[in-house]
Image (cartoon, rainbow over all chains, first blue to last red; front, side, top):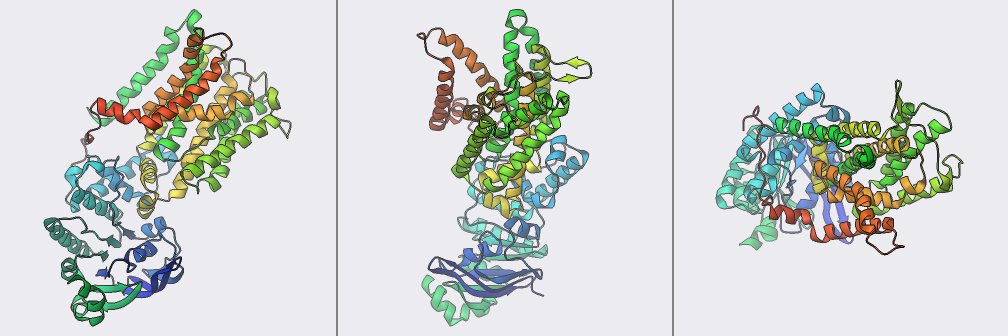
Amino acid sequence: MAHLQVQGLHKTFDAVTAVNDLSFEVQRNEICAIIGPNGAGKTTTFNLLSGVLPADRGKIFFDGNEILGLPPHDIARRGMVRTFQTVSLFDSMTVLDNVKVGCHGKAGAGLFSAALRTPGLRREEKAITKKAMEALKLLGVADRAYDQAGSLPFGQQRLVDIARALASDPEMILLDEPAAGLNAHETTELASLILALKNRGLTVMIIEHDMELIMEIADCIVVLDQGMKIACGPPESIQKDPRVIAAYLGDED
Amino acid sequence: MTHKRRELIQYAVFAAFIIAVPLVFQGRQSYYVSMLALAGIYAIVAIGLNLLMGYAGQISLGHAAFFSIGAYTSAILTTRYEWQPLAGLVPAVAVSGCAAFVIGLPTLKLKEHYLAMATLGVGLITYSLIKADPGGITGGVTGIVNIPPLAIGGFTFDSDRSQFYLIWAMAFLIFVLSFNIIDSRIGRALMAIHKSEVSASVLGVNVFSCKLQVFVLSGMYAGLGGFLYAHCSPMYYLNPDDVCHFGLSIKLLTMVVIGGMGSMWGTLLGAVGLSILPEALRVLGSLLPAGVNTSDIEMAVYGLILAVIMIASPRQRLKKLLGLDKPRRVEPPKNVEA
């Protein structure tokens, strides 16, 4: 069974159809890229998948369960997390506290155990700290754990953003243009990081304009144009697809 | 010095201050003790409002409503139904909490100034209801008189000093509990919500539930404050203009804002500072021409403080002046390897 199944997903904003009857599947432990020109509906698709926006119609199955219509926090707790195009860390909090927020859904302490600092809460807080440090180490930014998040350079903020999403041990992560604003060196590191996530068993969906990066890491590519899927398949076949070249790759060169 | 150690020292200094005040102000100066006891009541309410506003970023312009609900609940039970004053504590806090729950359910879906307007409306409605007294239980404009003082065991809290210690012991407790909440999963979620509700929600934070919880908690703190007010006010007397007026909501809000929003110690100082303000104005008032009412000036001063802080954001400037605006690095705890 596919890890993620999208069927007939549809979303309009007033007169504009942002996502038009979109269907695709993502297999477990695969890196699936969504590409397309600006305004193709890529980010809207992520917003629908993560529950940030309601869809007009369609079905989304994650792990075989229908998730369309669930609130974002519920979808996150089921193991699908995401990052945004614009990094928005909680900038007055420390890097570590940012990542700890990512553990929120996996922990259960309420107001009263927090107020009384019960032994159960202390144990849970310890486990959260451990988990968050692990995520920071994975992203190579553990040395910044006790710095204020807003004080980090942009590239590191992006890494903290991903660490925050990973802290809850998700099964699937959606990355929205993670290479945007990164330099060549940072982009190479990002590529190996994404492959490392795959090796750890995660399913990755990625929106990206950096074609080189996509061709290097993606197992399958979904090409969108004006909200519609115009092609879908492994990188080699996408590169040769005349519709894709016309709609997207042709414009670039 | 470790984080924990510093925290303990701060608490110790706070406790020492509490113990010292009634010993310093004795005899003819004991008036200040009762004034600072009132400051402790406001501090309890302001700490709750700070959790809601300063940390979670949700504005309430109607917090006097929960304060008065707590005060009136206990006052009615102890005068009309002759309950023991101490027995009024649980109902006072519970009814305020329930009121916050019922009010929060629809209003917390609103954001920013819409929420501010909605809570303002709730405050005004509560004030009108208590003043109009349609059920014949609040005493309307005359209020409730002869509220019994608190008694625990054989001891009655009817002196300035005993009330001061009782109130500040509660304030200390609330302060520590609230600090613990901030330094936990819930506290982090609140701060995350303040920055971005969408970011918080995709990380697994149930935004609405967190907002509702902190709203109810701040309502309960306000109810506790109201309870203490009812049984410790100098004349053992409640009336709607003292406990439910819009001016009180603004006063509480100003305490949080002046304390820097999102600072526990700041809120504490804000509460004490603004409670001393009427006294300071009274002294100043003697210099003003006759006929000028200092309580009118009081409201104007709150307004001025709010306006100046909103325009100038002196906290940021003060930080710059002191060189505290530099990126912060927190001392890592010893037991976690980085």
